[in-house]
Image (cartoon, rainbow, N blue to C red; front, side, top):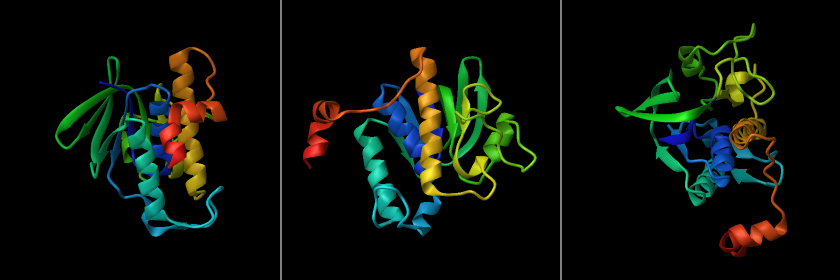
Length: 194
């Protein structure tokens, strides 16, 4: 059983997975590899001058792999439901359980609807500032929560907000993922040196 299941492998989903795995939660991502990033070239992503969207996604996948995320690549989730102690995700004929779920499926809102998440008058998933839906411990991110305000860096921020809220709940206090240079050397020395 995982602590958190992330459905969607674009910037929102992989950012959520990066933050949760980096901070000790057993994290699984289901990535159908249908992200719009494959059609993009980033000139407007802070800190990146110019990068092909697919190359960016490869880099982000490498990052989550480095933190031990269990990544189910090219795997489509067919159902998500609540269970007695969290959530169950059905994918490729198997069921996976976790305490939390993050929906990061772009503009596709079908899984949020089947889970029973509330929607706004604009027909987007209704979330609070932490990206939590009306279903406790279920989060929605990116294009599914925004009417036509779709942007990779916004989606990544949504994923980070969901992850930090989950981490705050798990730790019982407000949690901040903020590293200082000494942490980088200690935790990620081999990555920094490359």
